[in-house]
Length: 148
Image 1 (tube, rainbow, N blue to C red):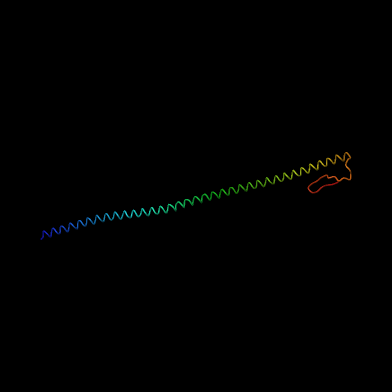
Image 2: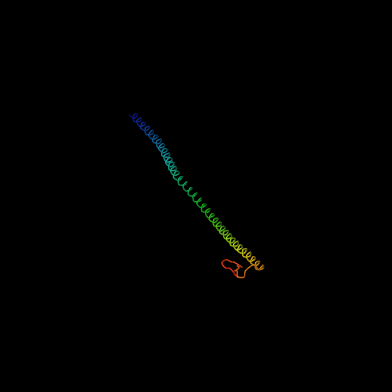
């Protein structure tokens, strides 16, 4: 019986060793699977974050571009406004000069007419053809006339 007990003990020991090796092997596989699962979960989390962050980052970049373009547009508008103000000032100055030229031209026409009239009257007086009772306009300036 001792031999049978020794065989039984050896068989139980062998079963325990196999079970222990199988448990260790199973634990290694489980640990590897757990590590792979954690890596996969981390990868999924990274991909989700990258996807969400990528959209947010793209929106942020687009927002910055829009802000930069808006600032550039405002600067351009300010430049155009200044240029338009300069053009309006130049146009007003030209209009003022043209008005003054027109006033001067009108004055010159009046002076020419008055000089011709004076010369004609002087010529008529020297010839004696001008009647003394006739009203003669010597100067006409604006609304005032000097009459003899």
